[in-house]
Length: 229
Image 1 (cartoon, rainbow, N blue to C red):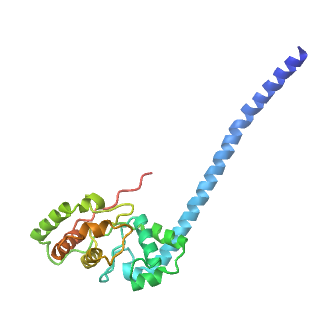
Image 2 (cartoon, rainbow, N blue to C red):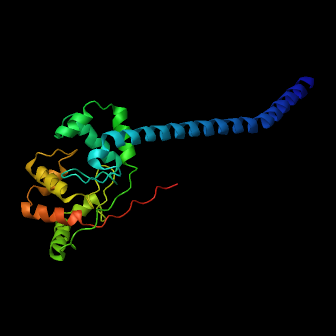
């Protein structure tokens, strides 16, 4: 009997100890998680700041400080998805995409550099093109819209032509760059991460490719949706 009472007393004592200690342990665990989250956020902020500086030093001269290029045949990076950017940087680094300037820039980038640059570029908001000297030609815009629907451009690039994931934003891209890219895909000289674009444009007449470039370059640039909190 005395042994049973002693056992129950010990069990009750242990339960009281757990009741007293458990909230403290939970609070300590939450505090550790908060410190870890704050440390990770500070590290991510420092990394972003470092690649912002490197972008300004290495990329802005051609691609623009805000990611909108004023240089002929140079793509607009503002508003591009980071996953698309890292894929292109990888292709340039491995010389699977041919560009003398970009191959030279990318050849010494580490995997961390690919992630750092693409993550930073992915934060650049879309920048509309400067106002045109003349209003868009409604006939060409109408034909461009019909071609985009016919060839299912919106199926991959979205109704707003803003892309996502591995698909680039093309709305408001430079017209000369779009022409070059479309002709490159058709000729098989422009590499992609898949053969989707080469297949999509392989049978489109060159004059229609140029109309598509005209239409897409003048397509209204829709701001990116704010990130969910």
